[in-house]
Image (cartoon, rainbow, N blue to C red; front, side, top):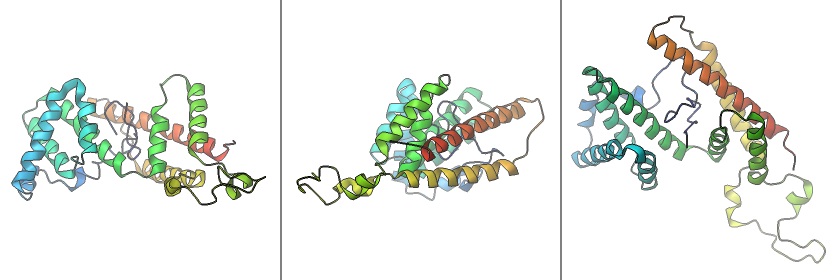
Length: 250
């Protein structure tokens, strides 16, 4: 599945949802100095060796890399150290101008970072990511229909009867469970989804207003324009989903 969120970074394959307007490095990359290899020396050698082995496994996995990344995430093996190892390899590839390696490692970095951020995301942001990934790029009407269905299935009903009388309670016989189910703490309320998505939109709009648009025709400028176009398209999709959530009816 194409990873789109985290947080609003880009919707190209293996890249995180809306790319930063000014192409600033991610919250992980910004902490890395140019000589990442020196930073690695600050970690226990055993951990570094383990991280390097994991990255090598990702590179050799080829078509199975998605599955390998998800399995590593389930085992709790995706850490900032793993990102640093990938970034170090990427830095070396750039010095040697190995274009194919640069592209592959860049995509791997973004995909691993996306998986880490996805695991850290709130239920609302995970749902938003899932809804965005449901879009096939063509059938907008069908996508909205499926998104509405998913929201109805996810958010608990908000009518007074459902709030006052829990599921399984017989109102006529006054018999049934009155206590909230154990999983109630994990329930995602529609109001919380709306609040978090609205806050996210305000943040990315602020960043967009501060961004400087490039008018050049060189490859880097063209890439910036394409990512900015993708960013705007995804913002529109998020705005649409917010509107659907606000006007949702059961």
